[in-house]
Length: 236
Image (cartoon, rainbow, N blue to C red; front, side):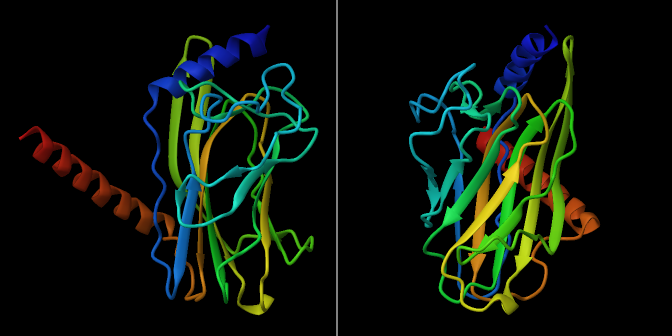
């Protein structure tokens, strides 16, 4: 009964929340950026419904903004399907927990660093960071740099949930020539909503592109002030 009550709460919370934008980090050298958003059953039909949410997806989902050609897929046999347009999210209702990959078979030439951002909401659980493998291998590399870019706690009569945007960066200077790569992760718990992801690549690694928490807080404050000023101009 608890899970049946939790789903409508999460869906209502998602519908009431404006889309969270990702951060375009400044990467040295030649870079490329792409991402996934508006993940819903209206835009992508045939991607499962509850309770058949463990069915394989008909195809990986190509990025729908930016210039890349990476694709988001679900690992066969795990839970997760695209919800309605009111949520714009992949919903993982139960175990086996949703496991996902984003694969780029034609990465940027001379690739030296990758920044990956993930936007999701969960009622409970501990997030396990994604891992990176390349050139058809299973290196499963943890990110060299991580940051929490956004956190929002929401509560209601049937429970509470927290929305996060996390960022992860890998230093690939010593990896040599990279001909393909895959970012893999598993959602932390049942009743998780995954809203979207962004992937940035660069042929030059110049240290962490993700600000330290204190620096990011200041940056976010400036961004908020800028957004407020823009809204005032629009109302003028």
